[in-house]
Length: 84
Image 1 (tube, one colour):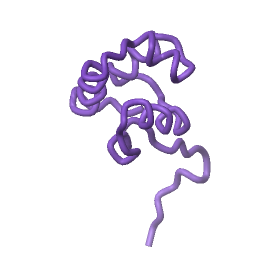
Image 2 (cartoon, helix red, strand yellow; image 1 turned 120 degrees about the vertical axis):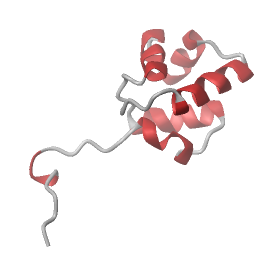
Image 3 (tube, one colour; image 1 turned 45 degrees about the horizontal axis):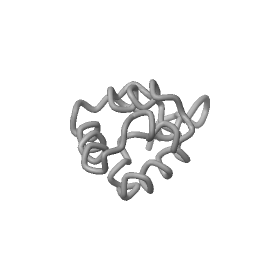
């Protein structure tokens, strides 16, 4: 996950507050420990796509709204810039 300041992180935190969902409860729903939720909110957790899908359903966000929380991990020859 990219560090992205408080924007998207704040969006998740605000929705958790609105829904009265704790980090422990959200972690249990996602199948991760509370500390992973804390790292998501801090912007230091590599959120898997499947977790983003679950998170979007739990909190009522579209995947587009959570797009900054996950990114494809390209390694090796696939991570080469195209030169025209």
